Image 1: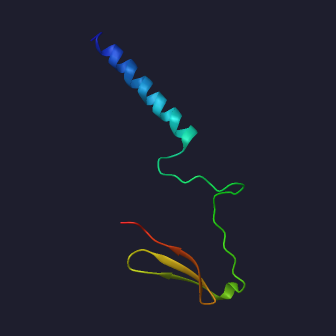
Image 2: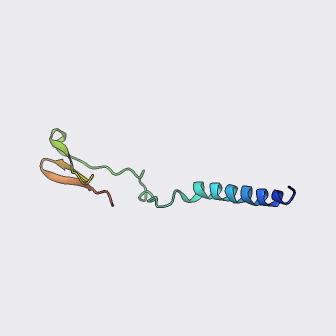
Length: 77
């Protein structure tokens, strides 16, 4: 039973190191926000009454304003 204590200590140290590194570097694959921004993309439409969100079967979407495409979102895979 005593020989398990070093293994337990090593496992706890490894877990603590991995949890502490998550907060400092962000999640894997995350995109950092743009400089001076909040990370939330904003679009402007001159006529908000003409906004239209079109969704497609492949789970992609387009946001249109007065017939012009403002944003196109695609889902990989």
